[in-house]
Amino acid sequence: MTDTAQARAGDRPSRLTSRAGGALRGVAVAPGDKSISHRSLILGALATGVTEIEGLLEGEDVRRTAAAMAAFGAGVERLGEGRWRVDGKGGFAEPADIIDCGNAGTGARLIMGAAAGFPIGVTFTGDSSLRGRPMGRVLKPLGLMGVAFTGRAGPRLPLSLRGGDLKAIAYRLPEPSAQVKSAVLLAGLGATGETQVIEPILTRDHTERMLRAFGAEVSVEDTAEGRVIGLRGGQPLRAANVRVPGDPSSAAFPLVAALITPGSAVTVENVLLNPLRTGLFDTLREMGANLTIANVRQAGGEQVGDITARYSALRGVTVPEARSASMIDEYPILAVAAACAEGPTIMRGLGELRVKESDRIALMAAGLAACGVQVEEEPEGLIVVGTSGANHAVAGGATARTHGDHRIAMSFLILGGAAQAPIAVDEPGMIATSFPGFTALMAALGSRIDAA
Image 1: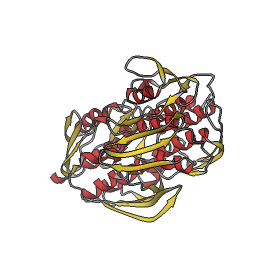
Image 2: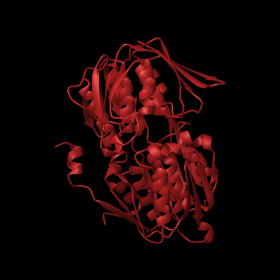
Image 3: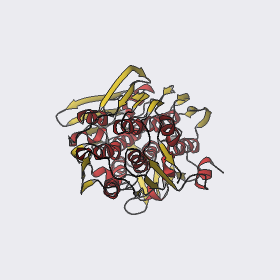
Image 4: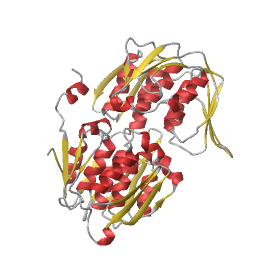
């Protein structure tokens, strides 16, 4: 039985409850960045030679990508905690079985792009959550490049693709999406001509950075139309060692916990500081958060640093819509910080949250309301009115429904540590998809999270 199967067989709690305790203190290390972990495995498999990866996030999503790379013919070996070796063969062979991406939307979309450049047939599926998520935004540009798809209407998983003989395109992203950009660029490696992606709104640039580290030439030009990323097809990739920095999306949970828990001071080390990923930290500072960054350094082509958060009197703000692409995964935990701030925090331009692992706008609104927070749900936004202005903490005393969404679960567990009454979450098992060891890390800092 695989690790994933064992986990689903009953060694996880069906419910977790978080309650207030004392101040949070200590130092933690952020788990490896999920976006970079997926990409390091995929590019390692596409390259020729041995790629060694340090700090790989060993959550279930990333393990699914590792298994997929092995299915495409790469040698994939775990050497130790966070240490992996990928023996790439310079391309993908046709897999003997269906590629099951589990809950990994990033993995599924990026692997589709990577596989599209080869004359192979591949069938993709995932868990019930991933099968309910739309894939059309990736299938459209890949189809324009010459990829043939068959499968469910929607379009959704499961579906099959037939790749190879691709032609380059210039594709303007209709909405900001690093996953779509990355899928098109990875497909562009196997296309004839130069593939271009035009970004009116900038998204995380890990794929461009990592392609260069693996020997590809990638051009980037800022124009009146937006940022234009160009990649010439037919470029071979060479193996390159990768050191994965800490995930800012994961670091956000203990840092926000410290900001909203009186007397707390928590440091999270080795956090990725890519400017296209730090929108949450900018927003928290605007809310009055005491956040300091030290030991800034370069690791694996990215800037990293150690972030310290101290308990702060937060105030509500209006978050610029243009910032959403740099913090789209962090809006649930931002909503928790907003619930503990003074006055309203207005978050708009969040339509992407409707089609994540769950409808995150709806679930955060429902959960916050159940905990006594004044909240207004909009079609593409959320307005949270904080309670600290009335000189009392969030009431709590509710069970938040998560629909198996890891970020929803972790966000409400953080809120429970600052609420008057405990907050429980259902279906917490999926936390392991992005943050294995979350409850143990929080307990080491002083949080009270129990399987009850």
